[in-house]
Length: 104
Image (cartoon, rainbow, N blue to C red; front, side, top):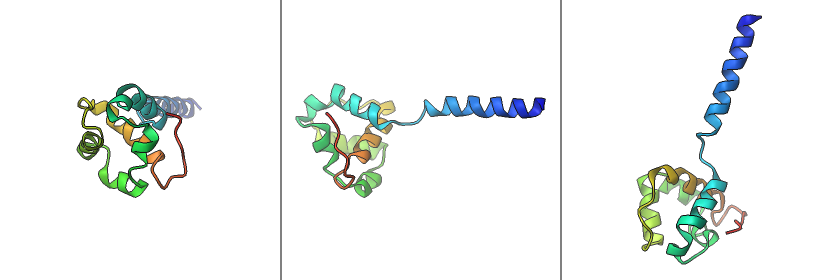
């Protein structure tokens, strides 16, 4: 019984701690509105709709995404590396073929 409790508590702790580390489309939307909207001269919906979900997947969420942001938003400051996953999730969620429309 003690072992079962220990396993349950461990699994719960792991689940809680790993959830916060995941990228988040909502956070990406907020970051876009705060950091990129003005520099891009376009809404997040327009930038996300520049590609389909498959195209965003191909671009990825690392150096390829950073280069694509620079291409789409040449006035933008260099993007912080820890924001890239959130931007990627946002762009992917609201891609041209997703059927979703962001509020920014």
